Length: 553
Image (cartoon, rainbow, N blue to C red):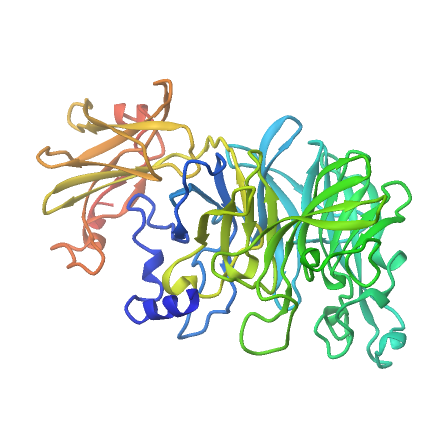
């Protein structure tokens, strides 16, 4: 199993070093390393993998688990990094997706506070353009706080959000004591993205009785109600969708039900599963503690939806209480008929490693008909053929750091990234020559890199070679050439120049666990920023820093 293998690895690997040494040109980046157990074949959907993994266990003085840089990430199928969002979001980020707004491709993510004990988060939605620049921050209407669980764009203009609003109520009818007065009023809103105008709002306590809660207020599995931070979360909305008729689909995790809501008056059109289901649900179509309910299609009296069936609720460790309703979690596609009022399972997608995730998760049908399932707190993602065959499976971190790694949702999108930031370059001299490394975080358009040496004496440049770009970092090895400064040029698919790096001088090579260079780097170099261009070096726009001995500064 995953946990055992990762713990065994921890006996031989330094706890944090497995995140390091990935990129010479970006030593500041330590992204998670995907642990791919079923490599992607040619029939996976085209596009990149979008995830935002984080550590499920807290760090202690002796143990650290999960990604060292929890953030949104874009990966290729082979685990190669496309973009690290570390530092782009100043707080905790999740539900990272690509979308379209006003005709433009964008990225968006929840950004804010994370309360893992209660599965809540409070903050806002941050939008980036395809240059990875922040273009919008969206907040809830009516003086409320957006929760981390949902943001969904409708028709490139509006956004669906979800809110946890603790309110005081008399809860004695549901077994509470006089001191247990707090309950969560689960709210959805639709907002105009451009203006923030509130277009629609629906609140659970106006329409759904706490009688439908699966988890009672005592013993407090979903909150005990003694204060607003511990409010009884009887309903727990974690997804919102909208159909072409203007009606909404919400997932109520702690009621183990899906509700279709009238988009005009807020009345409940139907309920699927739970204590008050409108449909007869066969055993194989039942679900509980689910996430990510989505409309797939609607015709005549038939509606088809997808969801992620956790079938579990509880803590992610051996302590606390847990509730299980099935041996594993699964992705499900379910058909409901509003004439016969019967539901049927269309297809189920079961985990390759018998995963049971007690929180989080997503199921999405892809444009080619494949389905991508994210296993939430189990920290894995799988792509399936329509018939339920798993054709790609990966954990979102590896080795010791893979223990306890979690990821709320996972997606696959086509994406074109054109970073505004300058590419990174470094050149290192070792025993077998000099190697130049270059990377450009978020770039998807570079076909190859051209490398040049630059002479300080006569300010001339010499072509050193061109290397096809096949991964995040590209390198050129120079076995005999004697160079002192180099730069690189990004070449696009049509042969056009996309960007030129700054210039870097040669540094001593440092290897993992290797011997230090004869002269330590800190004794031979420092950085001095040149403010005004004075030569061809800077005229090319390729000299950002000049490395000098400290006594020369």
